[in-house]
Length: 322
Image 1 (tube, rainbow, N blue to C red):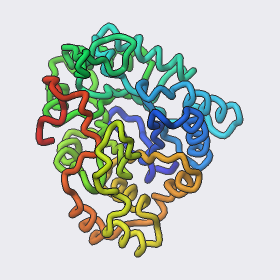
Image 2: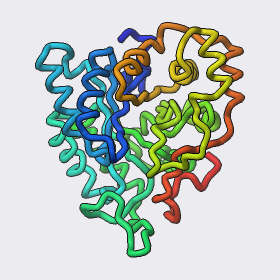
Image 3: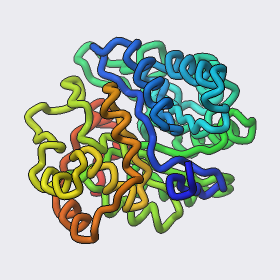
Image 4: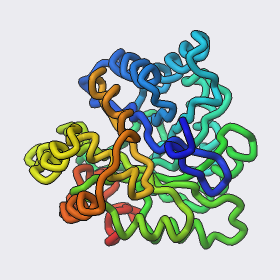
């Protein structure tokens, strides 16, 4: 990937501007992740985003190791992200959590390790612990202590960079203002797409040299477990479709290009070979200032993925405006 396609992080490392997301709905078999990740690397993706809670780290690691063995890529060509889950926020659990992910991946290090949510949940085997009424069992931990444990993971060489995901401005400031801060978060990965363009959070992150990474950039996989299926389908938006037609590209490519031009690192998720191959074309064309303005105007503050399990926690990130 040339420099246009990579973004410099505040710690000096480079992150490819386009990443392949490996989240899959429960009903989709893990073999799909295996196949999709393989197709993504073959198509030219060098940034792979996964997480402990996606439960596909073994599959992702297998593909990466196979592609290295085949001589398609070297380990340093791949930028791999994983994430600390909410049930492991206690500071003594952070490093063992990352080590567990590395065991599953079969790798010595990840390139980026993120705190998946600012919300701590009751430790244990259950990823989404609930009481008998179905209410999330939350844990109270100090996010700053969790961050210190993340810093130690970087010092130990288990991850090259550290960052956060689903944090709001106040929570980012809490870390940035932490006494004795050793490393600031290099990025904040959040839901971001033309219907929810996060412009205020993006401006704030830019002012602090924190890269915004967009998930759900194509309007999410419409997984009924996580979202209201009556919400409009982003890629059917008439404005997006008109701009796509004008450039002779797909609406998905327009949605991805929009983020790249805003300086946002964007994740694309698909299991279809045609779509995966098409998504890497995001660097082959440019949107005009008028196109960008028209897409900006689509913002309707629509969060597809409200992460209801975080509700009621004092650190629920979506209680603030941004």
